[in-house]
Length: 109
Image 1 (cartoon, rainbow, N blue to C red):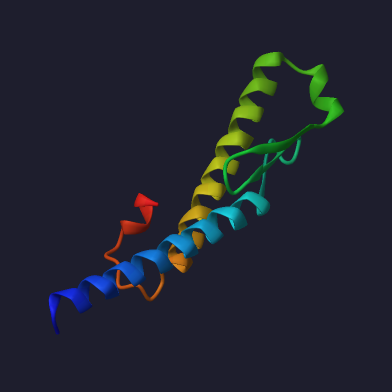
Image 2: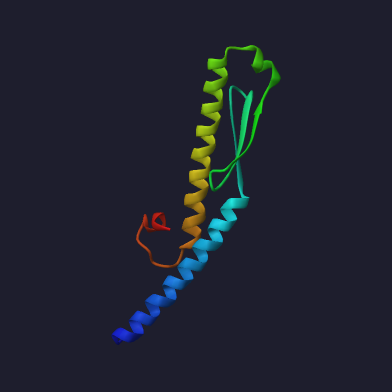
């Protein structure tokens, strides 16, 4: 195989990966993860692109100490971020599947 044909093949693969990654990123913007803390007293909805869409606080919790409320909000958001990160990894792995990329390369996109 000559070098020019190899370069053309590499460019075609790069364009396909770029298209797949852009599509995956758009998809992540519409997918949501749901997390909660304090047995559901605080709930967070976040997109796969880490945009917090909604925070719900049970009214009974508002009678408690502000420190506890803050801790539960932080815990719910951290759980949502973890879930969004997992969703990102799964989606990007699917976008680059079959491309023969070494593990961890999807993190570059």
